[in-house]
Image 1 (tube, one colour):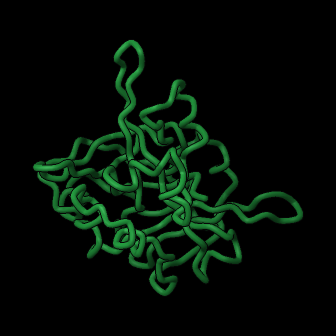
Image 2: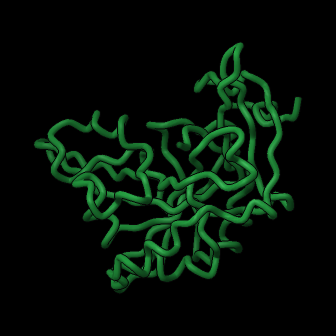
Length: 221
């Protein structure tokens, strides 16, 4: 699964990397947790792609209670077209979730040890995501999203059997395009990322606290 990640760079770098017109001001985040607002890139028909802040934890449009989002922070790549919670979004509401690193936990005899994973060159990247718009009976509107996961690559496998899907930049346009509705086409993008470009190291258990959001969260120990 993917339960925490980071986004520490400034809006200018995000604007250039993802070729966006504008990006809202963002503060560095060292321990992003479920239910918080996260930087999400979407593209709707006849519109340019744009970055929005969405709640992490997808709330399906048909949901009666928005609390369902707490259980839908991740979506398994293997069953997206089968699950009612994700099926519609997988076909027409795909998104990029902006990050520069993420955490996974390894079960040990003394508890869970957190690790930080990033690209060796510390570049930005995007998780494959799905998004929805939910309306309450009082016409409250919430935009929310989920991170897609797949089986772990060789680097992460010793730590955890799952990892978030990291998309290759050459797939961004097709992944975002709502007119691309071929499930087979977009499903092919959801493979484990090549571990040769990535690095992993142990970090402090401080990251276990979702309220702790400081630079030492991903400092190597």
